Amino acid sequence: MASHKTKATTDHDEIRHWAEERDGRPATVKHTSRGESAGLLRFKFPTAGRDENLEEVSWDEFFSKFDNEDLAMIYQEETQGGDTSRFFKFVSKETAREATEE
Image (cartoon, rainbow, N blue to C red):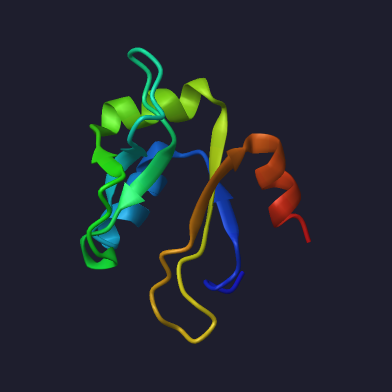
């Protein structure tokens, strides 16, 4: 499979590695959390500018929410032009299976 193709994973190590290779940190969108649960999951990238709506969380908090919501990450390693891609999206596991079937 070419590295610009869309992939899906639920593997914590793979997700963390992908994000950290791009200087991404686990984050949630502010004001979307409920109680002790993290809110909408995102990655915060330092080169993406200042995003006041993102709040960094620990990897433990991030993956707790990820697992509790039964999510998968759809992502690309590279753009079609060969540059490092920061494309990712968190979706249900079922949606991930459908999106990556060919």
